Length: 489
Image 1 (cartoon, rainbow, N blue to C red):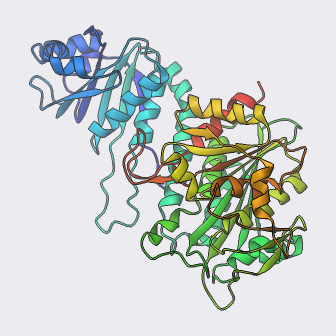
Image 2: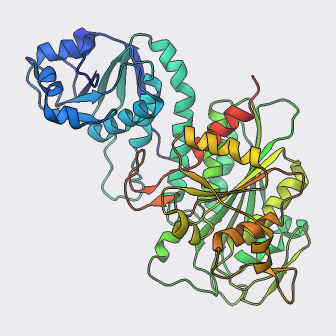
Image 3: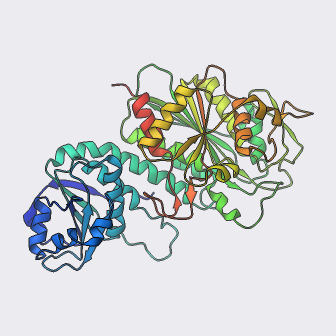
């Protein structure tokens, strides 16, 4: 997998700045005040840092921005990055600065003179998250990116603060890699194998094969994958870091490729359907993060892995399938397959684990993109306190999320003449009727959140913390949600 760049923390040594190679970064406040390292570099460059801080361009820059001086005189570094940052910046500003430094860094090594900056750990997280590139299938060997050294006044304290953040970065990278992989590589079997390998981190991993799923009655899920050569699977990942309390359950849609089945998608853009396992990818990334940072919480992650292909054995529009719950579903559109996968895995999660809460994630509907664009995931819930806890965590981690409605009026759109329900409710309120469908498989006593991440899992332009492509959206927010609401002291 793609691993985050190596970031080390050492005590500030202004005497070493002159000979630092690669890229060098110093911090200057918005009003032009220089710390000891910046003053040292200013002397070495014969006042270049002060001239920059007094320039019109500096006034236009916002906190967290970086201005670069190429091949600065008096320094061995090939570039000097001057970071505009207050002495006590916000978390968002510090992480933004780190991300901007990652763009400047490229493949070179970098030394960041952060001094007594109180948010140096957050700066390191921004740097790690943005320094990502998926190069597994490039024939030209990818350059190994150099690491970063951050000079701080208390390196041991900052390193301890940054350690769980490094675990989050690795979880995000794991998700991004999974979402970026082509479907001929990330088959259901390969996906399951990658998750099984996380047993080495202390997760308990079970893989339920088709015979197991048939015995459990997961015929809704199995119907989605019956036209594919890749066997359908459910992978269960348990992290038992808490006490005796019931776990929080995370459930992910893992459609490794979605042709739409017999309700075939248009050819244009179908290649993007390699990312239709994004929900499962996020669940996997969160579980990896929890294991790496030894979270003091009980969490179970479950993912339904299928491939939706047209074939002589594939399910047809008009078929009726029976879910594990026992409800019958008239399949109006085989391209509305994610909910058929999720409903069985969600019921199994509740039946087996009696979770204290359940969150499902899925690249479920194009309609959520029409409603919210690529800035926010849709949040649907049957429990206000549960939903508000997640929304607070998402806001703290700068991952866009917006609460959407549920209601009986939408539920009526799912009425079927021949089965208990249809799998689609028509074009109006498509994301909401999809959520209403899933809500039928949530027990009354289970606090539940449905996250429709179709617009945020993979994007066509750079974001604050990722290059274009897979974002890893949700790993940070869910890790924060667990840390704030479910970990033992």
